[in-house]
Image (cartoon, rainbow, N blue to C red; front, side, top):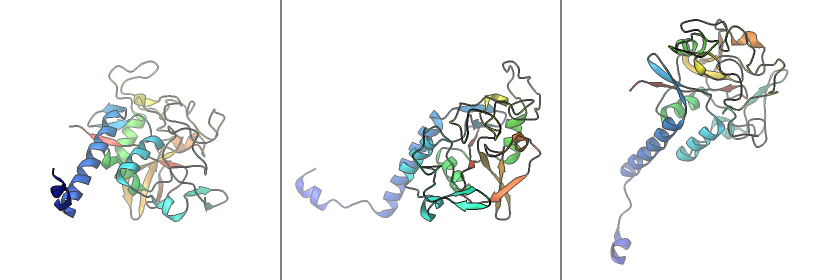
Length: 246
């Protein structure tokens, strides 16, 4: 290109620029989708772990998103009632730099979680899909002690042992991805650690699954029916993605 051409070349129009940005985001999301470890299940795949701070950071850098908790000064924690915690966001879930980027990304609304999953080539699972993955062993030849076809009481098996609950364990708050005991179908933290948004709707509410580190093991059971406002960002709520078979 000559100096004259550099002076007279026109910037791409907004439509072309928008297409270029969309293509760049799609490519970046596809890279995340290809590198995130998944578990293959009948009809769909699912992230082996909850989406981490490190994964969400790559999405935020690519998309330029500012989350609701960031815009409004912080997410929420329950201490004698729901309290907004200044500066608590997915970047600093407990108000300070995270001890690990492998911690689950929290302080996100259900819509923000869904947007990440779309960027990564997936979607939020339905409650039925989540429960199927969490409680029924679907590997054809699972390692001991898992039994193919068996539906377990907890995502960790016949007991909540090995999960990050409010009981005695190695994690006073959230645990980094992959550090608790692997459960049904080789998935981590389908019970406890943090609640997980799914796609089920009830008016302005969305369902959350699995319990969290704040609760005991009873909240890990399949019969727990928990809903939160779709726009509610809290320290206890994260997510993972599901992916349709190609």
